[in-house]
Length: 488
Ligand code: URP
Ligand code: ZN
Ligand code: ZN
Picture 1 (tube, rainbow, N blue to C red):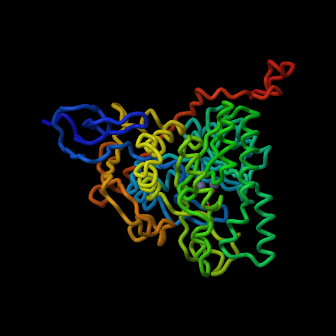
Picture 2: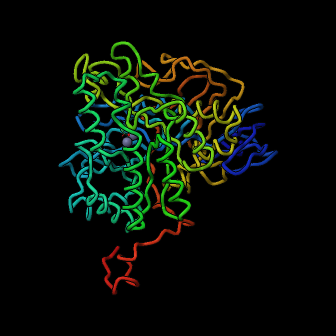
Picture 3: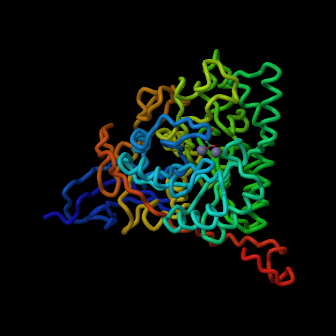
């Protein structure tokens, strides 16, 4: 009679703060023992020469989601989650997008209905709020937070999603009061529109000009505004997909000042640049994303900000649109860049790229890799009572990485529903060869072993900002404003 369902033996185990040799025993989906000479198990995996790491948690991806213009991503919850699993992830947090006029209840019911029968990995949702009516703010949002949807994204650009500063303050105030985190797409809408009109009006409508149409300063202006609006209320925020060093510097300064600000970047800003968009015909459309790719110097700066901890979160921002009329070219064969669908695929390559170019090349430690792959996301997004580290009592979500395995990235080998990858031809060293979710092997020998719908919805805890003192603006503080209590 076996003591355990599964044992992983002889591997090097790493968490975000330590690396050690140990065996791991799993029972009923949980890690139940870590040590040596553990008892017998029904199944034993020999991980000699390999790293045994927490399963990745993808904190920013767009799956089976309609864009504001109604365009559906090419991945549904099956292909998107399968691709995530092959890339070493055991949990994903895609967006449930509210478009104007929709109730959050309907939005969440729709996304639960999409994910539950299909996802092969565990999942939660961030809401996207585009219509903060009184009912949304004071009834629906608090209810969603109580159901474990403890983060939501707002946009400072895109005509159909944008919230103005006053709406942003309303959303931030609810988030602060209820213990939720507001994620912010920070770009100045007017600058983008002004530049786009000028470029297209002067005959510069080709895909590569998308990169010019989102100036760097559009990002830093909006990040600064978001940090100031949130700082006024002392509300926690996370600036997503930061692409510029000036933007990152504002985040670093805010954190130095003790403000409740987190930062995220993505592989496209570390591994790609706008020169690569200078392709014949419409092919540059494949690399149109927002914020856009920058230049080589910027890539190095973003790496540095990842190394020095300015970015706590590293996400793919997987937003897959095929290079055809269902995706990138939905507005015709040769649209000007403002009508090209924005977004890149990358959920499967997020971790192999960072393992290879970050850890294997000595830019970050193995522990920092784990922090960016899983632990920081689990802490910031309220999952760390269950996920994000190899700890007794937590879910047995584990990825076994072979540091000797080398691969050339090919679109045909990806498991998403795309026909291209922006990383085509790159050579990576290190690969997640076995992926285990709640004790079940879901990837082994390049094969999927999970059933559709094997993933479960994971409600998330409220945000923990311990150690980030912040400071309510004096005008809002009853101790300093003649005793006026606005309930903030
Ligand atoms: O271009 C991008 N990133 N598309 C996805 C939507 C978003 O703003 O993250
Ligand atoms: Zn965004
Ligand atoms: Zn995104």
